Image 1: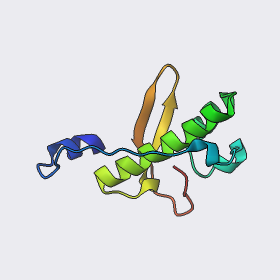
Image 2 (image 1 turned 90 degrees about the vertical axis):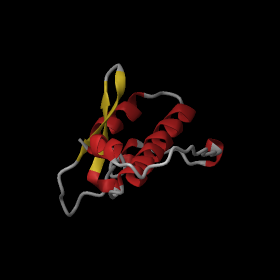
Image 3 (image 1 turned 30 degrees about the vertical axis):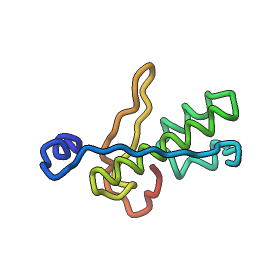
Image 4 (image 1 turned 135 degrees about the vertical axis):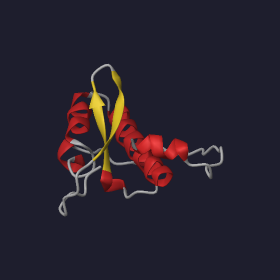
Length: 104
């Protein structure tokens, strides 16, 4: 439903963004560090990754996706989550409002 309303808007112009990031300069994150950043399903997926580089790519990719959706939907980043699904792409889902929720 969130994406449907986006598609119906007529004022969105086609465009492209290119983001570059040197992941070698990022710290290693532990599952307990990302609990407040990612949805619990993403924390589980993160824990299953064995390579340091892949873990960093995973977290950065999810955060960039959430930032992009936040900009496109003109909604705060805490109002939706990327839910991990086995053998499938993550699902974008609206999150119920709770004052203490700061995770993505």
